[in-house]
Length: 134
Image 1 (cartoon, rainbow, N blue to C red):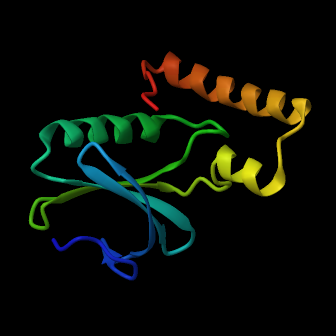
Image 2 (image 1 turned 90 degrees about the horizontal axis):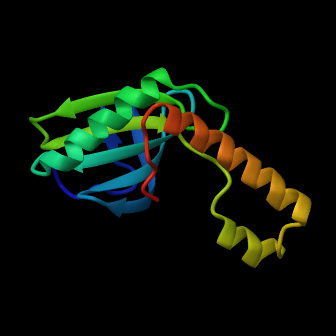
């Protein structure tokens, strides 16, 4: 597989828009799906550890429902293409640093609300044996 580019179509239904990030032998892209915006994580198959981690993440997300955790859509291993994919709904909103740069600091009430949402999501993940590394 050539390096992914905007406009590439993956799994016959996801059109790549922009790269969101990279790490641990893979990349994550924002993409248009058949009926919604999605995030597509892709791991090159020569990275066995990253594929195992991605499979574990897919298995967890299939079972998990929480308003502050992305929704699982699809897992696909394509050895013929040399890549494995995990597709989830695209989390909207951007990062806090960009928000503060654009809009200024959040109020104490807004910060408390964000903290409560984060704690709620982490609690559910920890109950499923997940330690978030980021």
